[in-house]
Image (tube, rainbow, N blue to C red):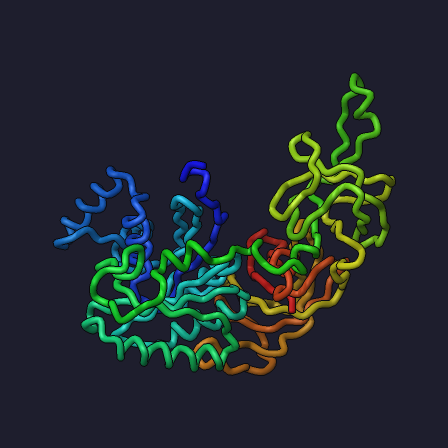
Length: 428
């Protein structure tokens, strides 16, 4: 067997870089792209010219992600910058989240789909308010794996005592906010130590490099078998082909959608929600091809052995692990709009493929993201506020708690007048 046949594909990993301003997030991503040789020659030449115009003696790798003109002028990251790269064994999507407090909503957007978060800490400045803020958001959004990257070790002479002290300090923060599965890596994004290559300056550190951690980290579909058993498919379209010349299509009725989680096979008993009607899967198809099973993230067509009423926005699941069907729910929400939340108004709540009218019944508390204290019963929410809300819905939704299933536990709130997304929420 050739060496090529031994290469294992570890799948797609979505990860997030976050932390305080100037902790080196953009430089870290630039270093990852540079050292994994995923930067095109013309891009590198352009970076070199830009760096030279700024009077820098070496290429500024942070320019790879600081794409907005305002960011380049200020030297900060405002928007979420997404970058893609791959190694021999894995594909990656990187989200570079902004560090400023006023861009908390951008950080929430980036964190909502991440399998792993890298929280950067400046070895000179230590654990800052924004470090704690981003750590709490990672915990709220249920990111399963956290890597704390103690960056700029070159500026503290690669001192092992500095690394040990910051590791201990962050461990206390993690314990306070309930953050689990935290790993620590010392590094220098500028010099490239412990990112892709180990370098020669931190021989006292015996753990893996950052890339080694990323290469072996499980993604969102490498979880426990229980999660995979919770089959969920929100229906996007009822397929009724209109082709009078083909008698096989006269009675064709398929339910199309993207499988949010779990596995479905022909012969499985399923339940359609919210109606509660049951049937058996007769066919699972992908692009007109029959499958033995459909798995999470595949967009499939399911055909049933019974004619039951299912429409867009309904959920198909296994009866023994079916989601909740609710008209009242409690959720954690991040307010995204410059217009404050108005409890007197109705909003459209979109969860999976279902959209219903929603009203905010009350706001039990708002989280003070700086102190992590709870402000009881605020009158309204301003942009970037994170709070617990109680929702009343005009029609039921089929959902899980966000902690148990991110796909069916997430929702957005839409202003019906402007069609703008004003809130992003996680069902509790």
